[in-house]
Image (cartoon, rainbow, N blue to C red):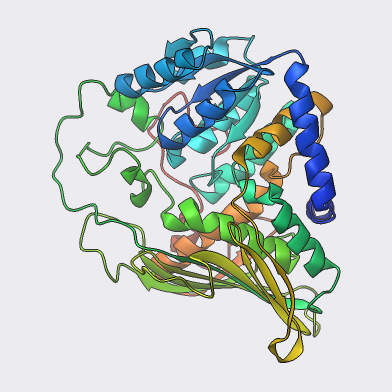
Length: 438
């Protein structure tokens, strides 16, 4: 497994901007190919963004839209029809999508608690999967997703589209080529102002929402007005917090640039709710340190740091969300939406590259190209499981308030039963979407 992870990391790192442009051109050329029949599961904010892009393609036929909120489902159908597409089947139950053998690929843009279960079910139905970030709600689900993709021989791409941005690929290659010497430490930060979700009491769900289907295999939590839509990500039962929402993008780049292709062994974290007086459960403030021991010798250990302040309206080191890489001969500052600056000794600016945000359409191209070619996508589930696991481990360490020791091979926590229990979740007993092996 470690060998495969190392191969995937190296393969992603050696891509150049020219290679990225070539892949994008292949995606455009595929517009004349036989259309791939797809379904979109989850028609809300990001789901609607995906749908707009899919509706403009000639090499894709959107056959199904799946959403438990009837109002959102109707809006998605209208969007597709206004784009000149044939009316899809509009359903609220994922099982109808899975049972249709004509569906070749599924886009999953549901709340986080559905990512793993839906992706595993789709893979076992022999359908390729594009699943939004974070790929899983908990660490155990991520491993089961990797196993499902491999045993079924399907492509599973995760929506961390920054891996395909030409300036990011170029920055990673510069780091791997030794532009700042040995990269011994990296940092990712999520610094922005989120909103207060207020306090609310349980009430009946809106008539247009099938709340039982929305809950899926998650434990029952009474509906309240500040639970939906998009606000679910701040709740333990349904989301991973903002570290899994926005932070995961920058953590992914921090891990990639650091050159680590396995889990860390030690995780320390402090944080909690410092600012928001509301019903949010996940931290609004976190400081997390991960240590990778390597072989224990000098120059082999690595450290990754994550900072989160979602009440802060300030730009940090030039980027609202960004990365810093610290090498023995220099430093790099990187923004997934703003380019990078490479500094040598004595803060000498060696290289500056400006860039715009990553292209989601190009990430679609990469996924569809891999379906046709059998290739490995840029944000393959095995690569992304390593990154998303950092979000889960950070949240666990923050919640228990102590250093945790992690076994990278067994994917378990040493000597701390309370923390180890958080690697998994509780499911609704007997629910049809509970993954096997949880």
